Every structure is written in structure tokens, then in C-alpha cells.
Image (tube, rainbow, N blue to C red; front, side, top):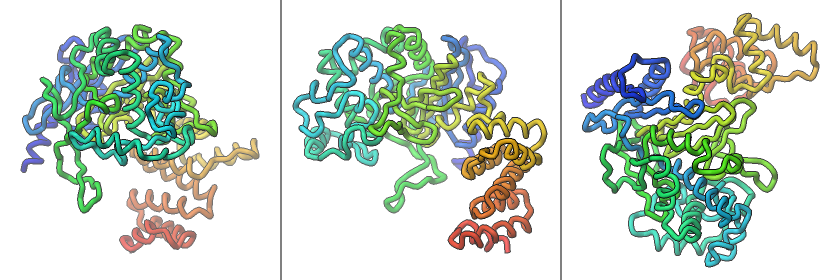
Length: 491
């Protein structure tokens, strides 16, 4: 009963709270329809959106509930905890110190904090900012520090060795930002929170943006929620919505302490790119992904594949971006080459808007539409475009023609398989079927290609061909659990 009542209220709120910058009621546009559908799919209670194009806010909107239990709608003034997006502000603060000649990104942390353990001191400021320092983490496995234990945790942490030599790998680590807070305090002569307020928030007019956590009371602030909880010692997703309380002691608020609105975040991005917070020449430094000792870069995921100075990065041939994310709830994507930025703040841990912001951007940059093959490797995207015109049933014909003209032409199995599932995600099962058939023809000894083809036949209701292909998958790989389980269901 309660869940049904909440969903009904949620749907009503979704359809009535989208507001444009002038606060005038307007008909829902394509972005509104996309986001309301996405919110229903992911069961996101409340969301704020801001889109910046060519230095102007072109869309502000808000949807859903800031407080589910009290049926309070999200407004443009609703404050959201932005969690680790705070690190992007720290990156700007550090670059302001660099511009002032007070800090060197290549210098060892020991130059500024000589009291640190000797083994820690060679790690550079850049390595702290990019999570490549190798320092032990004060919050291992993301565990929050119990209130009042910061001093003891800091003392115990300093007895630990490095996790790995500085620069050897990427490892997300809150100790890095604790130390950056200490450095900002020391070089500025003020607490870092005051530095960020004086040198970023106030100049930009971010009057509602403030430091704090779930213990603090802010007017018009969104509650945070999650569908996960600990069950028998494991984190599991449940059907039930739960309150989420994040606590960050003051010393760690460089890591995750700010609360803001999408509108004020947009204002900050405009000021940053207009040269009001940093010199224009500093932005490429701020946004350059760190290089590991072996010359590679790493990040959170195949999408967020690098990490710069407080800013996760997306390195790709088309529409690269810098993309701070926070708490699995919120994300900010800046597309420097396209003069576009998208801010999405939500109150659901697990909403992960970084997974769908590119789709929002595609409404402003049509070349980014997934239906047009955006995100596919260049050779697959070219083939995708041809098949959209001629029909996906011509896939093998076009590939054979290309192979005849270019003997070196190759389509990696994993990439073709991912392409097929991209089409499945778009509910284009017939087209996906042709791509999986192509992959089977190109890789006849791969059990995985048959398994994917079988799944698609099964989804289309063709059980005979699903069984035939699951059998072939199991023949090629007797350990295939999925093929064995599906055959039990179908036979």
C-alpha cells in the first residue's frame, strides 16, 4: 500500500514540477520526457537538471520529491549533497594556489607537510589530486568514520605503509584530499572551507551552496535515499527505499562536504570557463588526466577512464569530457570541445547519472545520439550508419565486402557483442539479432557468441533456435552456467 501510494505521488510530481529559468510553466520537452522515464526506470525520488550551452543556462528543470515521506517536491532552491563532486572545487582551489605561486603540482607533499611519515613524503601534489599517490586510505572500502574518531583514525593511519609506490596505479582514496585540505589551510592561512567560500562560492554568487553533512540542518534540503542495505554482511539491493545518512567529519569535507543546487553549479561552471576563477591557460592543466608511471591513465570505469586534478575524465575520440561524480547520486559533465555542460543532481544513491548524461547531451549535440552509433569504435560506427540506411540484414554482406577490399579489416568479437547489446538496450531486437548472427559467423568457435544469439532468439520468442544456440554454446564451453540454466528452463 505505502509503496503504491508513493509511486502515484511520485508520478504526479514528475509531471508538474519542471520549471524553466524564468519560472514559467512550459510544456514538457524531449529532455523532460527522457528524464521522467529514466526516473521511473531507476526509481529516483528527486532530480535537478541544468544545461549550459555557449556560456548560458539554456535549461533548468526539477522533478520529483525532495522528501518522499513528507511529499515535498524538488524546487530550483532545493539543496542536494554533491558528495565527491566537492573534489572538483578542491582542484580549482589548488590551481588558484598554483597561479599565486604558492604551490607546485610536481612538488612532493613533504615540502608542504614535513611532519608526515617519511615513506609518504615523496608523493606529489598532482598524485594526491589524481588518486595515484599510493597512500593508505583513511576510509578503506568507503567506510565512514564514526563521529569523534577522526584524531584516532589519523594517528593509526600514519603507522601504515604505502599501498603501492606513488604513480604505480589509480586507487580512489580520501586520505589524498584530507592532506590537500591541510595544505590549503597552511598556504592560505584560512580553513579550506572558508577559502572555497571566499574564492569560489561568493564571487560566483553561490549563496545557497554550503559545507555540511546529514547532521546539519539546511532549509529546503533534499533527503538522501538508497535501495541497498547490509544483509548477512553483504550489501544488497532491495525493493524498499531507505533513508541514507552520510557523515563527513570537517577534516574530510574536502573529499565530500558540499551541498548545492543545479542552478548554482551551472553558475560555477560558467564562471570557471569564462576565466573568473582561474586563468584560461589553467583549465587544460586542471583537466589533464594523470599519467601513471607506465604512461597509461586509469579511472573509475571504461567511461570515466581517467582522473585529473579533482575531476574524473572521459578520454575518447568524439566529445571528450570532464565529469565529476558524487555519491552515486549526482554528476557534472563538461564537454570542452562542444561548449556544453550538463548538471544532474539526485537524492538516490545508485542513480548514477554519469551513465545517462551523455544521452541528455545528445539532445543538444545530435552527433552523440546512441541510435546513431555514438560510443561505438570508429569502424563499427561507420558500419552501424550504413546498416541504418540499408537494413541490418546486410551486416554480413557489408563486412565480407570490406574484408575483400581490405584483408586487414577486423571486427573484435567483444566489440561486436557490445554493439549487439547496445541495440538490445534500445529495444531493437531484430537488429541486435543480425549483429549477433554476424558475430557467430565471424567467431564460430566462441561459446559467448552463440550464448548472446540464443538470448536474443529467446527474447524474440523463438525457443527452438534459442535451444539450438544454447546447446552449441554449451558444447563449446561445458562450464557455461547461463547456457545450462536456460536450457533447463526451455526444455
